[in-house]
Image 1: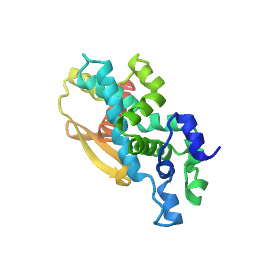
Image 2: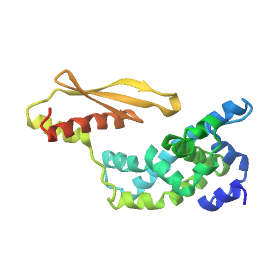
Image 3: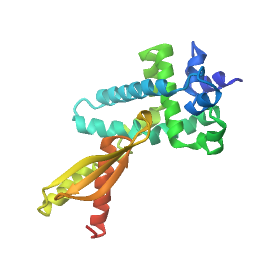
Image 4: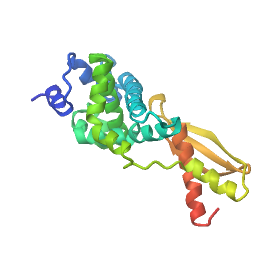
Amino acid sequence: MDMTEDIEKRTGYHFNDPQLLVTALTHSSYANEHGSHIEHNERLEFLGDAFFDAVVGEEFYRRFPNREEGFLSRIRAVIVCEKSLADKAVKLGLGEFIRLSRGEEKCGGRERQSILADSLEALIGAVYLDGGFEAVKEFVLGIFKDEIDDASSGKYRTIDYKSRLQEHLQAKGIMDISYDIIDEKGPDHDKTFVAGLYIEGKLLSKGRGKNKKEAQQNAAKIILERETDNAL
């Protein structure tokens, strides 16, 4: 059984254009090593990110017709994140098929969370180009069925650290709370944001995340943990 047949069996999707699958699993390091004529997966990753977000968002919108935007955003974030994608990529065994440079291979690229997540996003993008929206919708809802069901049932409890911190500090009479993105690292397709949390004008914590909201939540989490230890 070749790579295409193996992945099709694992995911339940048959590619009309197998080259899309090959491109989806080609890391930029492989293309850089073997020549500019080889297409890597960053453009497909961009596309897959958009449709993954849309499919999961629509699913929760339909499942929870009476819930507010904030709840829908939080529950979607449980599924639409790097860890969720990487964990699913591991379960599907995608790591063994990703085309990497020799250097990336030696550095453990097949097990790297960001590479696994990006490859699955690229695969989602490839399914969209190959079969259209209904195909990618069926694909995403199929391979993430258990995670979506668990999130819907409340198994994954999301914590809004920003709201908790604001309530906690306001109860102490502290009203001046603000956040600012103070740094961005990495290429456009794989950025890490650093958010600064300011209380009464003082920078008291820095949080990192793959998006601005996640960075702010992590900055708030740090302060809450300090409060628990009476260290603020």
